[in-house]
Image (spheres, rainbow, N blue to C red):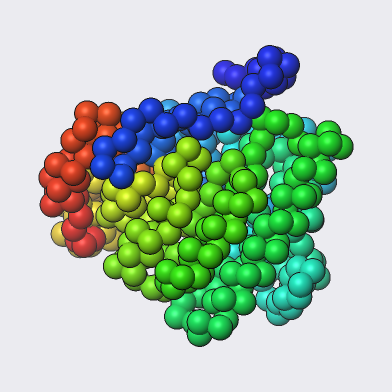
Length: 389
Ligand code: GUN
């Protein structure tokens, strides 16, 4: 595994290499001192320093090059300063590959209680114990540096849709001012030794489903020159069609030589349609959360393992999967575990789904490399995109 110190002493910086394109779909590599990320990439979500119900070894063996962690949750418990004293997030959770951390902008809105947003930042009460906290661009970057994350996100404000255009515009413009402050804070950390050149800070495009607001947001961020750009504020109630349309209007405003990350997305169909439009990175709780709730993603569509029709089904969950659990455990057994609320049911399906998502990304990368993405997408969609049975 990567020796971060020696790679840094050789001067290794964060970099993105675009290897080939197929239509708008892109095959690339993100290079970090902790390892190379093959793109398009899906990042399993490890919100509280664990990809729920999985050992880090399983996540790596599934094919994930990078995982995601959350500023909001980790600042509340166990605390960023504590993780720093314990040697950083990688060492703490035993994952030595790259980690991207979200800034807290989204989670403070969806989870925090009694929020107060000002120009300075967001004051909120913890969803755990009601204790008072605040997040600003400067504090978010400080926390992400204490965690030691490889890809950090600007602090932003993500609003739920539908919303009034004036409100979308206000949040987008505030997020631009917070982007500048996040960048300044990150650069100060580079000077002070709290961050190094192998780490990167991404900007986040906001602007709802309004093409003009999206374009303004993207252009202002590009002028600030980030090493990567996220599209935020999607999959927040607008629906698949509006999401795809907004992506189609936003991505052309971003530079081709920097990675593009679609935050918090999505279903297998969302991923295929977004890669088709040129997205390089994703994260979503869906494979693990839906797994804990009894859903299996398979190469023959999604299965609801709670369904009584599996009670005496001795066939495997997915014989086409490379995941041992998908081939070795019967549907009847997993149905029983899930119905009984057993931990092993959640563990099996989280593993099956994490492998499925990584296999899906690997298949997309191969299709792009072979110049067959459109054909592959049509064939795959009819095979796997079914409503959960
Ligand atoms: N996760 C999903 N959407 C968003 C967003 O708009 N901003 C941030 N910071 N995280 C997200």
